[in-house]
Image (cartoon, rainbow, N blue to C red):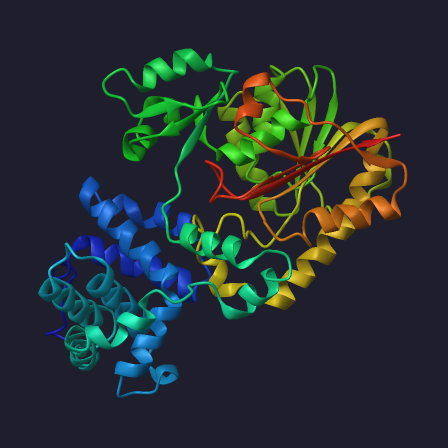
Length: 443
């Protein structure tokens, strides 16, 4: 079609945010990976900030935005093309939640996106719906702040948490999470890395963890030579607690059963100065290759093998001093960072994951030497994946018991140990992601 809009007739930030959103909604992509793929086209920080706001805002307000489209559209919601649904959701999000964006620019760009990616005819449909959204804005005020958490999940979690907790969790979901980086001590002392990062301007600040910094200016940190040269890496402060909780010592034989993308194995290598025998596992070939490359760049001495944590391996029986199982989980502790989790997760998925965790724990237990440690963790706040999963495990495996998690003194000012051997972190109460860590010893 000769008169379709061209690439340059839409603002670059909206063009890229459309591509990422389409990827997330209809190609089951993870937002962070899709952003990595498409954001190279955005050269200005303000374009990156605008696109990021549109992407995460649209996904987080999905329940509300879908309802608005249903009420405004002359076409049945299910009959609207997927591309147009995405364009409308992003458009309405900007009109209703981003007050610095001129409405005419939003409508104009959304119409041009529809013409560019679908057809001229859909451009006029998008135009009509968005103009109606501007006119009828007041109608939707009363449902703007209704829950953004799917109803089934709120009901499920209400079995374990009260209304005050759930409200705090919902409010926290809409916030932007902080970014943290961890220093690779195999290549640099934390203090040296900190000084190098803040040489020109202050782009990060220290935390209670000596090797973890809070990022103040993400683009400056991501573009730093320390990031390029594998001296620092992105790791949330909650996830970074795992290696400290493990308390690995030089000479220990350690297996990380669900290691990809390799952050926890790298941290263990960093804390032990490459003097522990670490094996990192994954079931997928491409993830194994990724870890091999990343470990090489970080100069971490880690063996990488293909292994399915659900399948028992005889040769691993009582072979390891420490076994790490960072189990596949619902991800309910990281939904503000990966909001697309809530678009896809179902109650059946949750039950399937609980079963997978149970199977993996059963195998992991057999790999621990007598007197050895099993560290179990998830980035979930669901008790059935966490403390209730462990309770069941302890009932079935009497040779295991909870053991003290020992941290440097400074850590205790910031972390509440839930009970002996267990840490529960909630993102609305802590600096980092929602997380569960449990340390068990085999007698």
